[in-house]
Length: 232
Ligand SMILES: [Zn+2]
Image (cartoon, rainbow, N blue to C red; front, top):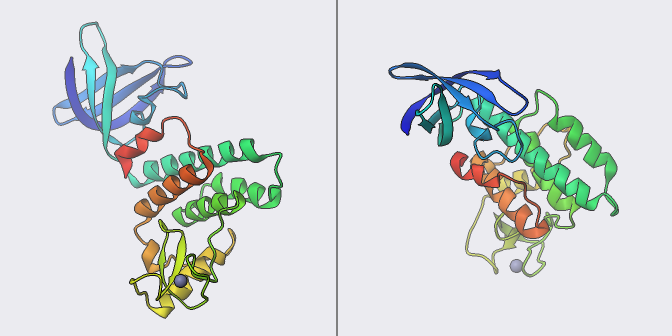
């Protein structure tokens, strides 16, 4: 066994399920045979992302280096986006398959797929689709009232606690303008331009929280969800 740290600089097809990967390490480039990584179930699939920085263990007993396992140290912005997009697509399509016979809002679902598969889809779109999954599954966030007592005089917001809170039910306080921004964002549809409220600016935390909530509320997750431990 040998350990390598480097950037993935080239990926080429080898067979239906295998890839050849070139990584650039501090000491030069190495060519590694990556068996089975094109299969959906492969635990090493995520390592084969162009321009990612990875740390891997390779088998060096035969003529070629063979990938055994590894971790992702860094994603380039684009790979990160495509991975998150693919994950959201995975969660979304699993959700659709389970709920296709229910009274689903197919127009919204269709539009979401349209947006997610667009090249220009951005993190705001991804976040909106995650909120949409919650709302389509009957877990819509109430934007008008305190989740605890129903009072319309809300003064704080907590995604993990399920929504807005009034001053009697929570000690937290947010500025009125920020509360309005959150409400506006949650009410906006996929096509409208939206500004991320200050509370949502840590997008990787927000995406992770939304994944957790969706998993809790709908039971829906996708294979390889453990990969996300490496990213967030
Ligand atoms: Zn309350």
